[in-house]
Image 1 (cartoon, rainbow, N blue to C red):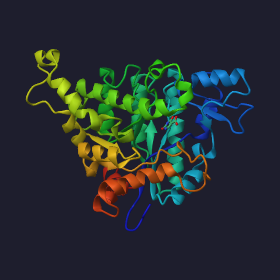
Image 2 (cartoon, helix red, strand yellow):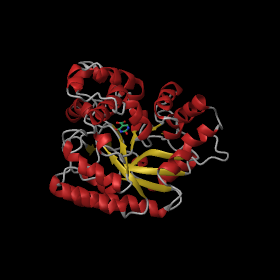
Image 3 (spheres, protein in one colour):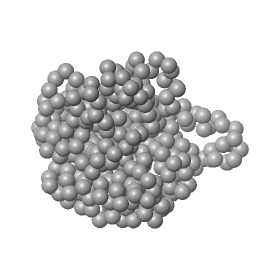
Image 4 (cartoon, rainbow, N blue to C red):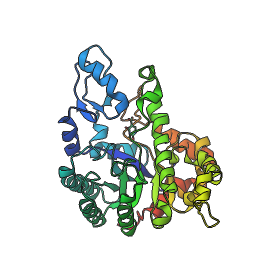
Length: 376
Ligand code: 5CU
């Protein structure tokens, strides 16, 4: 990546702090961390699509190890800083990786959220010019506990938002019970970083999906999940009800930039919606919401997808990211440069021109402005 006169900000970069790994190690169902005789490092098993390979590895010591190796890249702050230095990243906005606290018992999640958010805050304070974070909400807890968590995050100096999955309180993000939470986040000027985890049901992938590694779940399941979640929010009127809500969508919005036109057409031609008066002249279209309340990360690995994202939201709303520590190099040293990072940087250069004002904006300027990273 070329760095001259440019601040590079990575807004899509995860960690699992040690206390969270302890929780995963104590679990017997996914998500979990487990050691297998056939693998040198503990394995991090996160996705339901990994259930079959987990089962096979538990019964057959020769079966391929499930999940992914739990390397120090997932847990170590020194490693995060080394990764940033290696890739000339000036600032990272770190966040807990999926599945956050979605599986934590209601009675425990408030306390776990508080300690995880404090851990992130402490990590940032150790590198004050280089780290900010998106906090984590205890969504399984009662509403008052969730609101207290937002108040806690609002008071943490380096917190700039929250990372959120698509399950919400268990019924998705179009659930009216979430409106007070969205309002509290908007009032606190905490941006939501919306990130997928659940993908699509396993049977969509067919009986041979085990032969295809993680490709279907990650390349297609994740983006479709995001697309569906945001479309449901849009159809439920969430963006109109909470006009100050701001969301960064992971993976350039899933397939939203590509499908927004089709979503619009389906709305305009839906007899039920028209009869119910939901397609009036004052309606804000999906395109309007994409340009007014949504930001997109630039984690799409190709200029083709990136150009669609820019067309949909605007050069001033795209934000560079790496998805570290996921997608490490498989055949070169993990301490060196990662192709998954350069693919995203190259896509920016190809889409808007290396060294251009738009490239500088996407690589970091937009993040500094949108997330107020110049205010410490
Ligand atoms: O490789 C994966 O499973 C993942 C994941 O779980 N979360 C993520 O952000 N990227 C890749």
